[in-house]
Length: 233
Image (tube, rainbow, N blue to C red; front, side, top):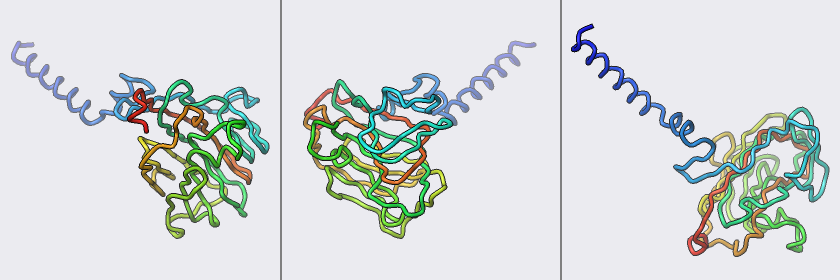
């Protein structure tokens, strides 16, 4: 093979590699950095596929009944992480999971909470502290964000409906005081908190609150650490 032809093929190969990298930046990013999305600062701290028979030490039941069946968390009541996320610093939190509601007569409020306080630290249920993301309220037609028990944002009642028996991908997050709830990738409600009320690290529990039975799968919790408390507040 002539040197000219070899140089020409070499240039084509380099151009192909560059085009592939530009077309699929997320692929290269995941391969290089693993479980942390450095573009947004999120760090994966808990991943649950529930492939065991007992709930284990990662979770604490505040009320109700929760069991593991066929890689699925099933139950009702309030369930939270047994440790804080983050547990050794201040930070923001993102909570992802799949949920299937199992009753037609859905009664709210029900949903999930971030930055809740653990039992014994407060004189009210943990889900009424921190940020609570209620979804499928008002017969499945309303999504609401609460701050320390007070409603601060909601979707319009006719925007969406949650149907029992269907599986939904839920994402809720506090991303630098930007509160969001997403259902199957659709942003249903959001709100910016002008100032954080989390003045101590007790506000670090993540959990579920479902008065009616549900099935939950594929749970992931991410955190974004904050070193400078002045920026956090």
